[in-house]
Amino acid sequence: MEKSHAAADFHHRLANDLSDLREKGLFKIERVIASPQGATVQSDDGRTLINLCANNYLGLSGDSQLAHAAIRAIEHYGYGMSSVRFICGTQTVHKQLERALADFLGMEDAILYAAAFDANGGLFEPLFDEEDAIISDALNHASIIDGIRLCRAARYRFQHNDMSDLEVQLLAAAGKRHKLIVTDGVFSMDGTIAQLDRICDLADRYGALVMIDESHASGFMGPNGRGTHEHHGVMGRVDIITGTLGKALGGAMGGFTAARREVIETLRQKSRPYLFSNSLAPAIAGASLSVLERLSSSSELRDRLHDNTRYFRAAITELGFTIKPGTHPVVPVMLFDAPLAQRFAQKLYALGVLVSGFFYPVVPMGQARVRVQLSAAHTREQLDSALAACRQAGDELDLLGK
Ligand SMILES: *Cc1c(COP(=O)(O)O)cnc(C)c1O
Image 1 (cartoon, rainbow, N blue to C red):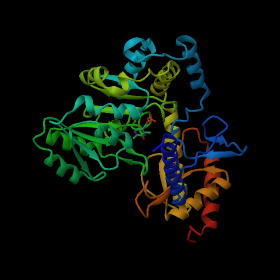
Image 2 (cartoon, rainbow, N blue to C red):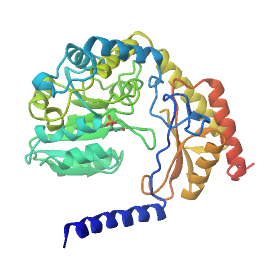
Image 3 (cartoon, rainbow, N blue to C red):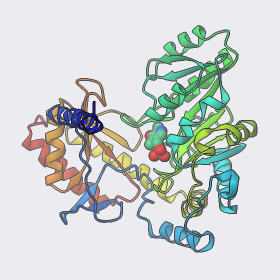
Image 4 (cartoon, rainbow, N blue to C red):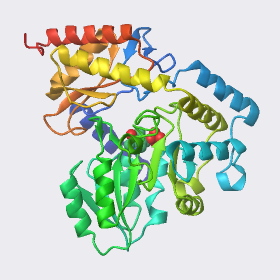
């Protein structure tokens, strides 16, 4: 086949696949925002929307104090590094941030990545091989699944959040050199908090290590915001923590792994996304450092987040909606039916409230929902307006039995 035909064939196939996605209602449309990320955002058609779908748990994404910390870091350290860490891409601010992250998480050492996706992608392969076993929750994040695929360890999967199945898998992995239990600290679709106390007990009983991904927990879970391990009182019993700087901890981008020094040093030597990808921008490193200082000196932001969460969870239940029970700022409002969830989200959008609807295959069949995410930045008035919109949309769709 000629080159031009070969290329036409290829592009034609992609176009067909794309229209297939559109027909199945699976095509993802990007909403365009013309303002900073915040409790409200301006859409590109000029409307102001109350934003209930960002991972902006502490409200720092659009925070001006944080923007100024980033500007100060740019002024001091410049814009970019044009280097990986081990050639000439390590500044004092990167070392300070790694130290501060390790201290904040209660771990010995930490290493930065360009994203949590990279932290997970580059975690398993350097540390484990075919003599070892990785035992992973069935609903773990895509980056964990990909990272495990890149590693030659034997793979075991336990039913989501199911401690008896975890035990079955630990027994199946008996005889392996190292066994690692891997779980999201908090699962983002349901706001489910992993049962880390029980996981750590099982790890003790079966001689396994424990790794958690704290992307939806670092900065606000636990009495001091250190994460799910603090929430469950198991700090010191978790061996490896990965997480993101792109959610609660400022919301720009960047990821990290925290663990014992031997683990972190091995990753610095061998972890491919770390070795072969550019250093985290100094502005992000400097701003992240100021976030950790702020979180250590005041509980104000997490108190506001948890107040908002409690308020919204109680009020939406009072209106007659069904939510998944819990305490996390991810609040799944259950519609069960996919078209209904879509219509509910569209009505809310028309009423000035931004939420995202999720349906199969992102969540199980029959579990369609709108996911609300609370932020410390939301005011009570904004939450009341959003709740009024939920009531109106719910009435119009006959969701709220009287
Ligand atoms: C968002 C998320 C990631 C990816 O984080 P990035 O820093 O944006 O790459 C990884 N793991 C979990 C559990 C997440 O929720």
